Length: 470
Ligand SMILES: [Zn+2]
Image (cartoon, rainbow, N blue to C red; front, side):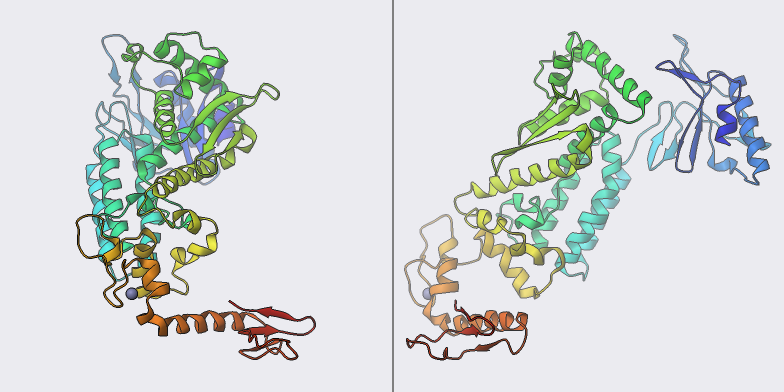
């Protein structure tokens, strides 16, 4: 069908010197023509070839949009077209066709408050459900946020995005069993670094804008690449009022090129969204666009706050751009927690190895009581006398009277809990023993022929002797 359309003699729409007759994505086809006659001819051709292949279009799922662009008479055209003998509905000025959830049309009324309300209600339902807490996090992370992410990327839903972020933040804190005074940044830190791994929607949308821009500017399709560059040059010329040289273009995208407040009197575009996203991200960690002087490839340099390192993503490695930006974002939030004198004490050591937080993803080896304890303990917000921040209340240990009832004291030093030290010791030992093949060692035995009275907890002998104690 598409071969028949591309070979017809009706005119297409000229873009960058190319004659565009159709656009196709998966099973969606868009036919384009500069006049009603050309489109009729194109529809007849595609109808005939579909008939020959035994395919039937569903006219009620098709739609036509005719646009008149004459000064003073802009609007839609009420032309009626037919496909395989059936009339295809046409769009009027304020009507829309929903494509992947987004309303497309001449001037469609965008009203997504209902969907945002629905997502907020469903986040509440997940929070109040009987799911395990780690399953609740998976549902929010994997189902709820992606649902609204596509819309947020394509539409200006600033207030709604903030509303969802606020809702997610409070619900995730509750799922982690954290009090409201706990640092909210833990929600956004990656799981492997000890956080809940639920990224804020506004950050995700900013990262999406940058990733999308990189894809367009480095597209393998020459037409897309050139059209993207041309519109970018146009945006720089109009918005910043400067010549669109390479330096100016990348400074504009990196938000380091000053732009007048009026924005050159031009309305926003995809490029101003990219610039605004870079501006917001640059307040968190450094992001800059440039062109490699050797290879001539576009590159984005990302600074990681916590490791004080930078990553450069070129157009050949652009598949990693989204992941790297997400990682830098997570590092930023981790750094914010670490900077807190009271709640950030354990953030850095916990983030050193993913094994420390492997249980957050799927709750493995974790009881509900462990879950309720661990996040509070890590942020130092357990209800202990020593973790009170304000007032002159007594900070003494309620059990042994030690001067400060801190978390390290209760877990490791309070003698009234000494029986649990032994239990913990045996639990760890049992786990190590289970992990080592049987008959390869002895447990709780004195090492044979050992010169001292030292009695290690665990000994592994043949073929070489290893002694393990802790
Ligand atoms: Zn004590």
